[in-house]
Amino acid sequence: MNKKKPGELKILRTFYPESEYSLINSSENPDFILKDNSSNILFGVEVTQYFDTPTSGRFKNIPNYVGRLLSKNFIHKEDIGNLKVIDTIFKIEDDGTETPLSAGVLRSLPQSPERIEALKRLVASKNSKYSQYDKTLESIDLLIYDSGDLVAGIDKQKSEILAYLRKQEESNTLKSPFRKIILVIEESKYKLIKIVLKSSN
Figure (cartoon, rainbow, N blue to C red):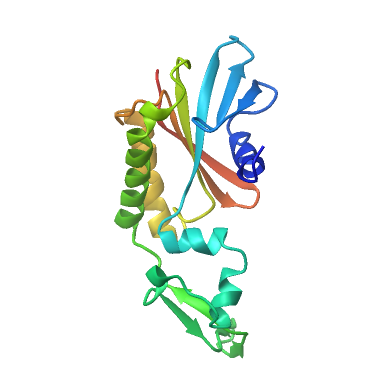
């Protein structure tokens, strides 16, 4: 497996447990071929990650990106103006006193509609590539993993976004050539939210 596959396999197993789905092959188009152990049916799964902005993707995928920003050694051209390096960040204690911390990087979080639009663009991008996948497979699922961008921030935003996603899950009206579109949100280190945005049923 290439360097990406171990991480993708971990994401895959958040929704397709090894006890129920046997890994037949790690491929490229789609990422994995699985066998449903209860029916012996083979199907593909394309794994992708959600980021609210390309900046967020760089934060999580470029090694020591924050450190490089703080040392002013590197900044991606698209991040100029979107990120602000602060020499000292202050933590406000419960009693109102300010405790100086080390330097940090600030960025604005997108609002709820912008995050939903980013999710829609991701699905549309994957839909447009569907014809490139293995045509011998009867069906292919899309598994989208979010490590916290989608519901980050204040509780009101999180509630709005989850309500929208649950309504989509209930209505099951999303148009896509994928058999299923599954969204797995890492709400915390120990809790995953799983939402089926599109189901074949």
